[in-house]
Length: 275
Image 1 (cartoon, rainbow, N blue to C red):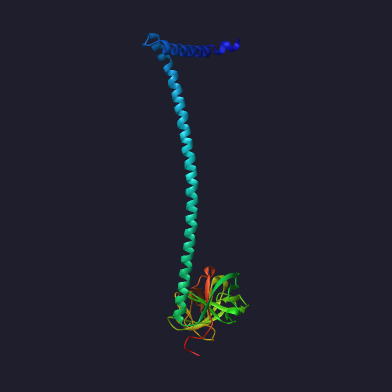
Image 2: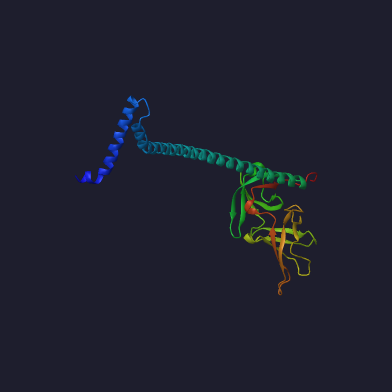
């Protein structure tokens, strides 16, 4: 009883709709003309038919949008995969180009100096505060010996200190134990470049009456018989005059960024044409 009281309006509408459908079906079968009653039935049922049509159309459109979105998601996945593959390929070619450029510079340096060299790759580093060494992938089987100079564009890297059969340790010029006889390119004043680890190096034994300014180019002098003459070492960064000392305090920035060093050349013989 309670159910009928609350839903009688809905039941009435449903019954009316069913009655209208029955009458419409009857008139469609037996009425050959356009009777008045049939018109009323058609008018009454039109809103329901319109609602049903709109509902079906809405569901169809929603389904089409869903299918479209699924297609977009799949297409997006494919494009993302393609972009990732192209980025990886681009990095591969960029790395190949960078390596080609480095090797080209090594070859140009080798040809400009006119010495016999062995090329090697850096495979490990020891980069402490003051200790600076690298390990390269060539050794005694390749003809390397202790004391051989090591270079890379644009200049001096260091010297060979420990040689195994297939690997070698190189002492960098920035190591605290490294000393190189050098001269200033502008004035030809000679001194010693000494490694200072992370701070690069310093130029020692230049008296305060000499002409030294920031920006001066420091080169190997060829003295001492270890390094060839004319290899770029670094550039003067700062010059100060201590009141109680005879020599300048000169800070030098090496030309080579040792943290990015990947390939080197090891000098293995005297200059071509000389014995």
